[in-house]
Image (tube, rainbow, N blue to C red; front, side, top):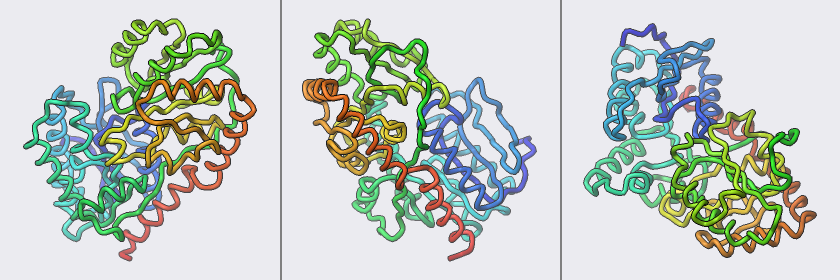
Amino acid sequence: MNLPLQSHPALYAAFDVYPSAKGAATHIQQAAHTLFDAAGGGLLYVLGNERLPRFQREGAVEILRFGRLLDNYLHRALAYSAELQGVLEGGMQDSLQIAQFRDPWSGIPLVRHATGRYRTVYEVNGLPSVELPMAYPNVGAATLGKIRALEDECLTRADHIVVPSGVIRDNLARRGVAPERVSVIPNGTELNPGHARPEDAPKRYILYFGAVQPWQGLDVLLRALQRLQDIPDLHLVICCSVKSRRAKGYQKLAEKLGVAERITWLHRLNKEELAPWVSNAYVSVAPLTECARNIDQGCCPLKILESMGAGVPVIASDLPVVRELVEHRENGYLVAPERPAELARALRVLLDYPDTVAQMGAAAQRKIAEGLQWSHANAALQKIHVELISGK
C-alpha cells in the first residue's frame, strides 16, 4: 500500500465519491462521523476522483480514496474491493473493533476478515442487483445473480443491518433476513432557517434538485411543465448534483418540449450554495418513478427531507417509501407516479393557493423538528455502534 495508515478501532467503507454534491456523500459524512465518534477515530475508505487527494488525515480520522479511474463499473468495483482487502491484510484488521459498509464491494472483504476480530454493520441504502439494470440495461442475468449472491453473503454475515425505510426492511425480509437483525433509521436533515434569495433567482420558481438517473423522473417533471405554459411567471430551477454533460439529454428534451426558456440549470452546488435555492422555492418536486428501485428496494429521499427542513412542501410521487415521510395535503402533496398531467394539475392547484402552501411548509418543518433531524438518526445509529463495540 505504501501509505502511512495508522491502526484504527473503526472503519467505514463506501463505494461512492466523497465528498461530492450527491446525497450519498451527505449520508456518508453523518454515518461515518457517528461511527468514529463512538469508536474514538477511524479510517474512511471511499472512491476518489481527479480532484481529490489519495490520502488525507483529519485529526483522529484518516481518509483513503481508491484512485484508479476505471471506466467499467464492475472492474472498478472489484479493484476497489481488492484494495480494501489489501488494507485489512496489511494489519488493519488486528486493530479494528467495528466496521460499517454501504455496499457488497466494501462488505465482502470486511465480513470475510471479521471472523470474531471485529463487529460489522451493513448499511443498506441501495442494492446493486436492483439498481444496476436501470443504469446499465445490458448487464446479464448471470452477472446480476453473482452480485445478488454477494449481497446475500453480506446480509447473512453482518452482525447488524441498518436501513433508511420500512420498504427496504420489508424487501430484506422477503430475502430471508430476520427482522430482529434490522434497524430502520430514516435519513435526516437540518432545519433550514431561511436564506436570502439568490440574486439571479426567478421571482417564483418550483425546484428540482439532486441526481438525474432515470428513476428520479425528471422527464416527467419537464412534460408537466409543458402543460403549464399558460402561467406567465412560472419558472423551474434544476440543481443537478452531476456535471452538466450528464444532463444534456434532459436539456434537449426541454428544448423539444418548448420549455427551455423557463428553466434555470445549476450544477454541482455544494450544501451552502444549494440551501438558499431550496429555502426560497415555492414548492419542491420529487417525481420518483414507479420502478423496482423505488418500489421493491425503497429509499429515503434526501431531497424530500431537505425541502421539508426548509419549510418548503414537496409534490412527490405517491409511493410507499414517500408515504413514510409525506402526508397528503398535510405536509406535502402526493400524485400518481409517471403521470405528467396529474403532476401539472397538482402544481396548478398549489400555485393558486399560496396560503395552503405556506401551511403545508410549516407542517413539514415541524415533522423534521420532531424526529427527522440528523441528530435523531445519529443518536439511534450510535446506540447500535456502542452496543456492538461493548459486545452486547
